[in-house]
Length: 141
Length: 313
Image (cartoon, rainbow over all chains, first blue to last red; front, side, top):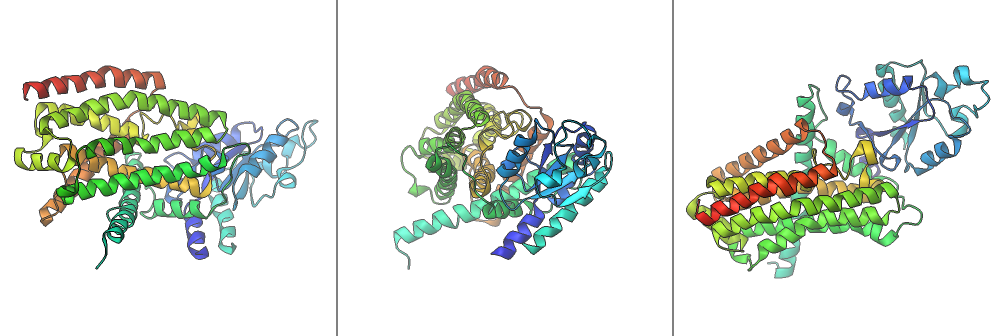
């Protein structure tokens, strides 16, 4: 039973795009990833409209004081098992906003992050590679 | 060997009920997704994709939103699944041995076909989410919009065949040729295909689930197994509704020879193709546009169909 589930979740990861006040640069690259050119549906990936449907959260941008409670809440709303992929150097470390007055913490100190995809912004190919890399964690479920 | 109850249970749970309909329905969903992918010049998902989706959803955590009506929220998907399975079983039974039908079974099928949408409304309203409630209200308006032309189109068939028993409608078509071949029947078929599009919640009528506006509408708060059951019942509907159209308009199902099975497959694939092409070439309407569309031109066409049927065309 467990093996069937493991196979199924490896074949159908649904992603939810969790934007935490990004500058839209990474968001545009994430949308680019979803276009027919890159065809992520061949891996079974779909963009889910609601965090309740999602298996993978794609985080972009820094978390500020205003968005922190919402950010944690969306993470809690996602059903287990779930993965988090931090896209862009802002989500990975905070980058140039690190010393800003409303920067709270890097994303990985708020929620567990599985894979970091650095870049400003990263290429769509790098985002796809990051998602597929994160899914290797499900093999040890 | 089996008594009547076990036999009926097998009909309901395995073939032509739950297991068979789920299998064909999920394969049709794959056909839909693959064809959509090819229309967008990409490769598309492998054939087992819908199966993997459903199995995954069955194994995921189930979250009931705080303050939602738990029992109603969790039982709504089961109601939808039961209704679709029942319609599928009934349609196949009436087609394969017409003597099991009863007077007015067509009306029962028409009612049961509304139940999945009603379950969606009930489940969405029970989840205590404003966007779900908005989606449920849109679904309600959509039902009001498409039921009227749907019933009028079905009325054309009833007038042509002169009976309310589905088995007799199939028998009438065996004697007089398909209902589609007459002018009134053809208009009714076109109306019904548009209604099927709305019943499936496909573009241009995916107003209730509009992902870009209200995220996923009534399904917004669903996760894990209930979501999987809703998606399964929707996939099964993609099989059941074309079979319903075939029964009423395209001569019904006749599996006595292998050519009959081949014809059935051909008719089914053509109907599926039409649905998918409409889906891929149309943007989403607003809810007021959809209501105006169904109550205006579509209902006008249905009334013309009835008048033609009265003249005897």
